[in-house]
Amino acid sequence: MSYNFFVKSNITFGKGAADKLPEILNGHGLKKVMIVYDGGVKAAGISEKIVAQVEKAGIEYIIFDGVIPNPTNEVVEGAAVLAKEANVDGFVAVGGGSSIDLAKAVNVLMTNPGSIGDYGGMNMVKNPCLPLIAIPTTAGTSSEITNVSALIDTRKVIKYVVIDNNIVASDVIADPEFTKTMPVGVTAATGMDAITHAVESYISNMATPLTEYNAISGLRLLYENLPKVVANGADMEARENMMLGCIITGFSFSNANLGFVHAIAHTLSAHFGLAHGMANACVLPYVMAYNAEACPEKMVDLARAIDLPLSGKLDEDKYLLAKALKDLCIKIGIRTLKEQGVPEDSFDRLADDVLKEPVLGFNPRQGVTKEDVIAILKKAYYSR
Ligand SMILES: NC(=O)c1ccc[n+]([C@@H]2O[C@H](COP(=O)([O-])OP(=O)(O)OC[C@H]3O[C@@H](n4cnc5c(N)ncnc54)[C@H](O)[C@@H]3O)[C@@H](O)[C@H]2O)c1
Ligand SMILES: [Fe+2]
Image 1 (cartoon, rainbow, N blue to C red):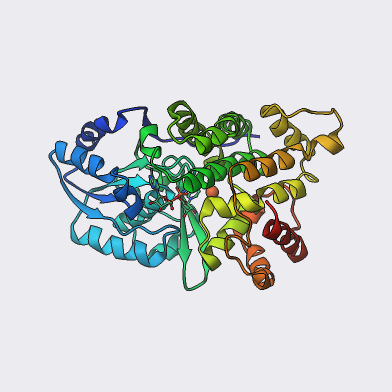
Image 2 (image 1 turned 90 degrees about the horizontal axis):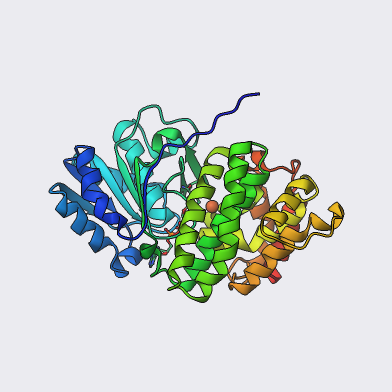
C-alpha cells in the first residue's frame, strides 16, 4: 500500500542564520511584511535583531507583538484586520509555537474568506498562503516546519487545530542562540512537548516507515539533551541538538499526527490555560503506560532507541518507556496537575471534552472511556 510523506520547508540552520533573512525576503520579492512576536521574545532582545534584519532587506514592515500563549481566535482575527489594512504580502514570525501558529492562522485569512474557525480540521484551506518565514525561539512545538496551527476557540472552550499543507512556513531560520534566553520552566515544558510529539507520532496509527524513522531519530536527540539544557541553559551544543531533534520530530508528527496525550493537553489548556508542554508532560507517562497494552512492540522500540535496559520480556519491557519518562519529568521539574492549578472537581467535565477530541482517532489504543481519562488525570494530579 502506498503512503504520502510531505515535507516542504526551506531550512537555514545554525548560529547567525538570521543573517540570511534579507536575502530570503528579497528572494520572495516581498514589499511589506508583518513581523509577529510576543512580549517574552521582545524582553529577551530577540525581536529587535529580526526587525534589524528586515530593515536591512530594505522593505516595509508592521509589527504585531500582541501574541499570547495558546493564541485565541480573537487574537488571530484582530491581527488579520491589521495585516489586511496594511496590505502586507508576507509574514515573519519570531517566537515559540504561539507566535508561529498565530502567523500561520493570520496568513490563512489573507488569501481565504471567512473567519479562522472555518478552517479547523484537515485540508480545509483551499488557497495557497503568502510567504511566511518562521524563526523559532523555543525547541518544542516544531511549528516552524509543521502543517499545523493550534488555536483556542474561547466560545466553545476547545483547542482545535488547522492542519493543511498550505499553511506550512515557506522558510525556516533556526538559530539555537535564540533559544538560550528561554526561562528554565519554558525550556523543560517545550522540550517535553517535543518528546511527546516523537513518542505519540511513533505509535500513531497513521505512522509510516518515514515518520517512524524521524520519530526515533528525534527522540534520541531530545531525550539525551533535554536534561542537559535544563541543567545548564548555556550549553549550546545541547541547545543545538534540541533544536535539531525538534525539527526532525516535526517531520514525523506533521505526517503521522499525535494521540491521547495531546487530546488531554488541548482540553487542559482550553479550560485552564495550562502551558502546552507542561500539560502534555504531566500526563505523558500515564498515557504511555495505558497505550502499552495496544502497541507493546513499539514501546520496546522506543525504549531501545534511548538505551533503556531491556529484560527481553515483552510484558515488562513495554512499560520501560513510561517509567523513564516519569523519571525525566521528575528530574526536570515538571509540575503535577494540582501544582498547575487544575481543580480536581473539574475532572468529570474535562473527561467529557477529552473524548470529543479528534486527535484521539490516531491513538493506538482505541475505545478510550471516560473512566480511563479520569484515572489518568487523577494520577497526574498527585504525582509526576
Ligand atoms: N503548530 C504546531 O505544530 C504545534 C505543535 C505543538 C504545539 N503547538 C502550539 O504552540 C503553542 C506553544 O508554543 P511554545 O511551547 O513554543 O511556547 P510559547 O510560544 O507559548 O511561549 C511560551 C513563553 O515563552 C516565552 N519565550 C519563548 N521563547 C523565548 C526565548 N527564547 N526567550 C525568552 N522567552 C521566550 C514566550 O514569550 C512565552 O511567554 C501552543 O499553543 C501549542 O498548542 C503548535
Ligand atoms: Fe504539542
